[in-house]
Length: 338
Ligand code: PEP
Ligand code: MN
Image 1 (cartoon, rainbow, N blue to C red):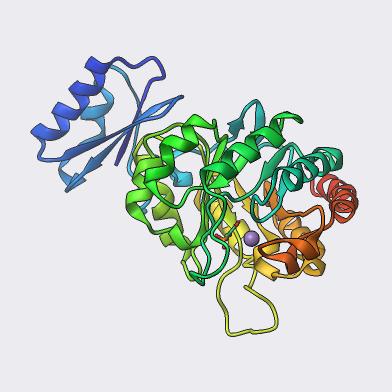
Image 2: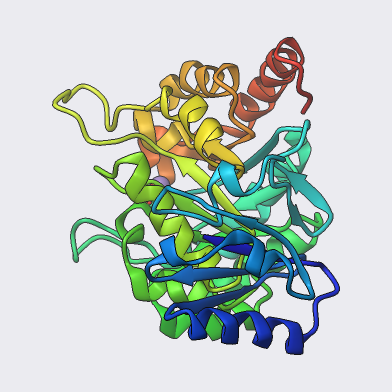
């Protein structure tokens, strides 16, 4: 059961609801978001009558949610969540494309990438300063220096930055450099301590799907973030492991409408890490938009063949610009815009 409080709720009213739950033998999880506070009742809720809680001051709505994920469930909020990223809406009618290189390499590489991202008409930029690499001997990312390079390059074009957080010890650096969207990578989708920490800040989070995660596991990971009070969550489908060897991962297109039914959170698609090949990005991204995705996360490098990471899947600046034109037409065909 979740108790949605009025937007102007006072601490006293929240305390009263928590005390009421306690008197009924339940614990209260208080999730203080920017727009609304939601109290989750933990324990045997069969003994509670909805009306008892609805009568309390400050309570807007009491909903019994049967799913293991509650705040993120469509049952708890009918309207789509629109995440506001420095004034740019993600989850509304307008699709958002987040483009940029796999990893931050040098200032000149990021300057060129930022220029190409803005020139193509994208409103946000990606780039990894901390890289989750399968081999410990591969390039691990520039670290904090990469955040500085990224910020400098993106600021020239007013592009909000999206970058991956792998370790809670770097959260302060992310705050210092004003990271606009924290990406939680596929490999950390079930790093619950990391999820709890990003739940405590109000910075939007892109939560990528784990390599083999079910939709329910993925939504429960999102719930960890929401339960902490951060309701600005964007889900990113990036392909799952399959038995097929000719491409990197299998883009789960079915997951998009399924998620739209199960959750009010925005869903974006990463066709780059799904296919693993630049030439596959066109088809996979279009499948994502046609299936109802709210945006794309794509890799683009000023000179893909020189990329330090994921060179095979990076678009060139020209390819990105051309695809933006095609995505715009497709978006309009499905009642969206770009
Ligand atoms: C990335 O987006 O840079 C990345 C490593 O993706 P994933 O976590 O989906 O593998
Ligand atoms: Mn990559």
